Image (cartoon, rainbow, N blue to C red; front, side, top):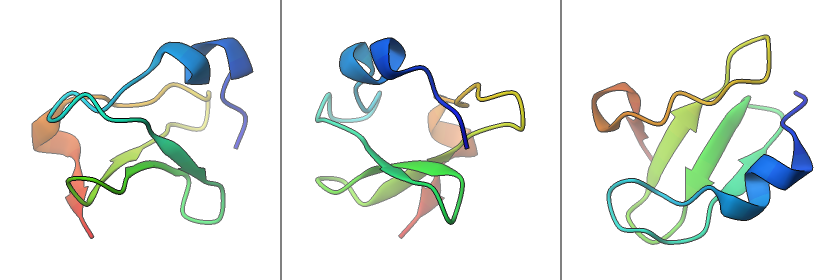
Length: 56
């Protein structure tokens, strides 16, 4: 998974505004605070919509 490092610096969880972590194996951005995972497309674009998030 390739997500632009500059983008990762400014992205936050849309639900709680906490920092996101990359889970490269699952191809997701993970918020540990609210336990949600946001999918990342093959193009490296994260889907940052709450209804597209997966509960951990």
